Image (cartoon, rainbow, N blue to C red; front, side):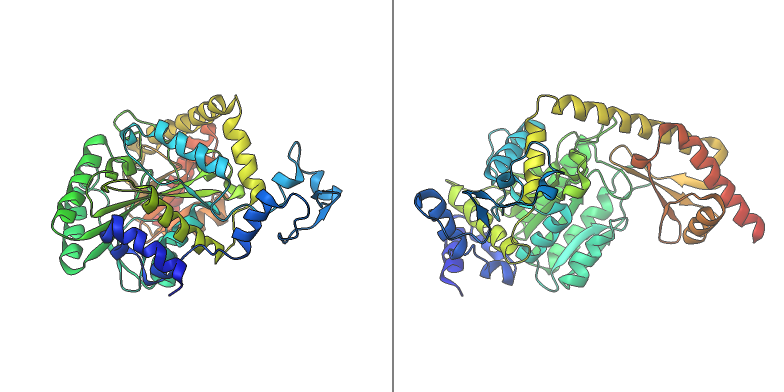
Length: 438
């Protein structure tokens, strides 16, 4: 094993040996190299005469560029747009994201978390997490209704075992019973389990209530107390888009930090939805937990392993994207912009809820609970979801996503409020078309 990896491992073991035990085989071998990158960093600081360490081109002391490229980038210097960013991410952006994280999650007060490591979007963040923490045959616990890419990342790429549970109970809330059964059954058979929580949830658009969040944390604490190491991954891709009073308004990550020494909380963020910059591909990985003493060295070691993984895959996330995001977050109008767009999405969600649950549709579908995010789902009663999807697309020019045999997902985020009733009337007509043809 590389001595740098061994050094990081010893640091982790000295502070939290249970966290070392949660690392994947790859994660234990990972380190952040001291070669070209660290030498370049030293040269950037001290080589005041001539610096020939970085693999970029310069001209007259400045970053070399094409006018045709910079013509499309307003008010950003080539050095802030075209050069390599650190594999950890831009320091100012990491600091800013962490500062905002504490402001948005009051339960983090008095707790310590790592500095976020920047990823190329949240999908890359999930894949990076999997590289660092998931071994073949590890168990990852997820609801039956889930984002399909989890299967690609955990099952196909990492050969992990996905254990499902029913997401909703008969009362229309989070199914704590099936969740607890899945967690306890897997904990009885494994020294380590991974639980992925995604709120607001894709595809259902559901976020747990305060009491449901407390119950989830209580279940996980109980399992950890029995001796099982628990990694809880919080996929917060749609964070902040909470439309109803009873929903939890912070990440459950905040309540998991400090919950139990055997619980490692991992927060996966994406500027994608929070800042409406889908194609910029900027995400974050942040670690939290319950540790004795100074956590600085422990978090530094976890950040270095994570950044080493990024260095060994994509090298670094886009410098230009990070700069654009940082400038936006620091702008005076950012809070007002976010408030304005939130209001538009909440109005659409409220309209979708009112229309989709109209009694005139009850013979055709049930509506799954939703209170947040971009999506909602309906459960069809009489026709096949894929057959209906194709029929609606071919005959009416309406596009939806079919999930399994009975579910249709509606992304109300990308439709106008005025089109909501037309959409559901068309879906209903499509159902009747298929019923009549049977």
